[in-house]
Amino acid sequence: MATITPRSKHCRAANKDHKKGVAQIASLGALRHSPHPVNGAEDLSPLMLLDNPSQSSNVCVLAEGNNMRDFHMPGRSEVLATEGMCATSHPLAAKTAIDILQRGGNAMDAAIAGAVLLGICEPQMTGLGGDCFVLYNRPGEQTVRALNGSGRAAAAADAHALRARGLGSVPLTSPDAVTIPGAVDAFCHLAQTEGRLGLETILQPAIHYAEVGVPVAPRVAFDWINSAATLQGAARDHYLSDGKPLTTGQVFRAPGQAEVLRRVARHGQDAFYSGEVADDMLAALSDLGGAQTSHDFEMVQCDETLPVTGSYGGIELVEHPPNGQGATAILLLNILKHFDLAALDPWGAERVHIEAEASKLAYDARNRFIADPDHSTRMDHFLAPETAANLAALIDLKRAMPTAAPLTESVHKDTVYITVVDRDRMAVSLIYSIYHGFGSGIASKKFGILLQNRGAGFTLEPGHPNELAGGKRPMHTIIPGMLRDTGRIAMPFGVMGGAYQPTGHARLVSNLTDFGLELQEAVDAPRAFADGDVLKLERGHSDAIRQQLSDMGHTVQIPETPLGGAQAIRICSTGVLEGASDPRKDGCALGY
Image (cartoon, helix red, strand yellow):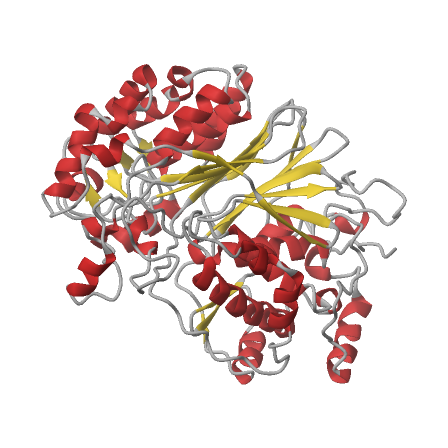
């Protein structure tokens, strides 16, 4: 049995021989296709930071030996606690989640409280007019449960009608792109079935901050400027200040949403999906020619479902099933199993190239097969080992392949993610989004509820599984994740970033398993993404790496915004919780 060798920060010191070995391997062309994982670590955990393979792979060895980061360098340490922890993209939401835990709430109460507040702290990313997906376990269980809180297209939605107008895709800022919001129904259902404290308690923090306001954080201000042009009509009154985007330190208030939340706290989901609140949303849509009706809102219902799973490096990756794209991360890792990534420089061009080529293939499969659960009929084929093997064989180790022909579906970058683990080791992985920045740009006049443009995730291609149709759920990019080690829930995590998310999940798992990185280091590490015909490289990659990739045929681009934002909580069998939060966002991990 091979061990997973710990590596120091950026593989310094601990691995002087590693880079020499990489050069030898590259010169010999030793990187190979293999029908089996070549690192020989199928029985080991990515969480193993031990030199002794006889010890439990669930034990976290914290800040010992080469795993200690270089404190001369900028960065952050993992957050350690025992009673409970939250990791998310805004500090107020993290603190709120911890406050709820300390008041006797469980991880579900805390996750919902934090998530709803994120809609006030990061309104460009998410809100009551959006959708959510959730993975979670109950205390004492190692079973991962899944809840689909995504909404459906209006019953009258019709792809043929849009094609007749000469459209090749669903317009992003039109009522045609607005699917009925599913998140509020999901939150109410989960609070009732899994929570302890009740809606009035867990929604109170968001009500408070919606009334008194939240200072705009730096990353939020950056996104606000980039997405403000989407806002139209009443949305400009609710989300601009004197017609301009809010800037860092300005206070954003949403009194209309505070009133909506008060009503939901007292009366549940009916207060949102019928009556004055629903009428306000419907009026905004009907004024623009939308086909949505009160019946569409009244029919919203979340669904309990079964996760999909795959293995890599001896651990199990648990993902939400379609209509989310989580299965894409599993397929991507299944392809990457056929390459000895652990023999490569973790920041080198060879690793980036293989990951990019595998992503092109996995995403092409996603575009063909993932859709509404009632229309995703080939998941067995999608996740079969033979499928990954056949795709891996198409990768040229020296040359970039042409991009697979994209289907007419939209890619977004705006999502929030929150994970919470409580003292009973209930773990919640929750992702919540209005799709593009500020969603459709359409907001209800009285209450200021921004409506998502998730319907732009449909294709207009006739006969496609993801073709727009009435009452159907679109393919979703948002995916919560969970790692399980030898049957034990080991790490709820998520990587925000729209279409990047499956690649982000795969890279985080690979960082932990193939390269033995610390959790925060694995989150911080530079990212790359094959997005259509462009290979996006964060500035963490050197000019030399960019040139190597260009020479291999990639069209390299430094993206305007960083790729995604990760949050994770590792559950150690020692009783310690270890949290990591992405510096690409404004947030943090907090524990107690």
